[in-house]
Length: 169
Image 1 (tube, one colour):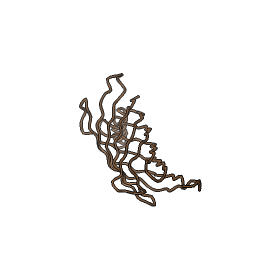
Image 2: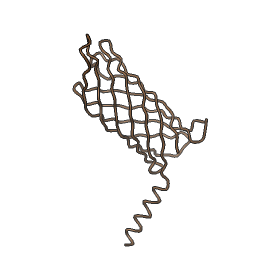
Image 3: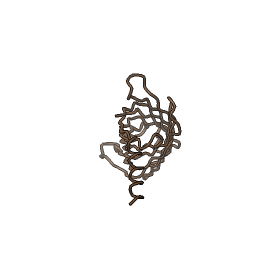
Image 4: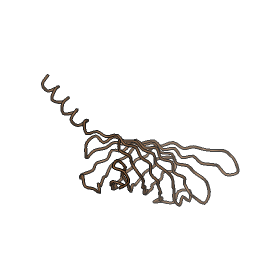
């Protein structure tokens, strides 16, 4: 019983720090290989997360990228989860982490033959910085670089940069 009480107390101490947040980012991606003449992608990311401790956070993301290529118009929708680690509590806070989730690419076929979709998986490594925006206390500025491996019929490797704001509740 003492062990249960101790573990419960320690978990409650960890959860007492917990903070929910939500944010939005602009995203630009560049292919590391030429697939379907993909030049770059641009889009947005909406996220919501929870800081478990001062160093560890989890986050759920929805991201839509508009793939710009010479031949076709494609959309890449990503739904994924992040685990982030931040080693410091400085005013500019570096972080790094891993992502995994679901990917769907949508193709508009030429000559009005319709729309085709391809489903798969996303795995990602990322690093970035976060700091107070200076606008209001709970508003944070985020910058993030990531390497994404999208496993669909024609696998894609992307290097992405995102910049945005996060509001901490």
